[in-house]
Image (tube, rainbow, N blue to C red; front, side, top):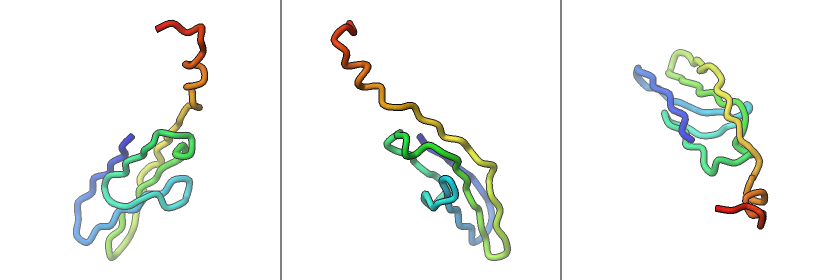
Length: 77
C-alpha cells in the first residue's frame, strides 16, 4: 500500500506517523508487507521554517492471515 501527500512551498519536510509513532518521511510512504502490525491511523505532518500542519488521518485496516484456511485439503482449485 502507498500513502502519498503533495505540498508546495520552500524548505518543506514531511513526516509520517502511525498511531502517533514515527513511521517514515518524505512525500510517499510505502506500507509493506501488508500485515496487521501496519494497521492504524496514519497522519502526515508537513512542516516549513514557520509552521506545521497535519493531514486528516487515514485509516489502514488489515485482515488476519487467511493462509491456514486456504491450505485446507477440502479446498479445490
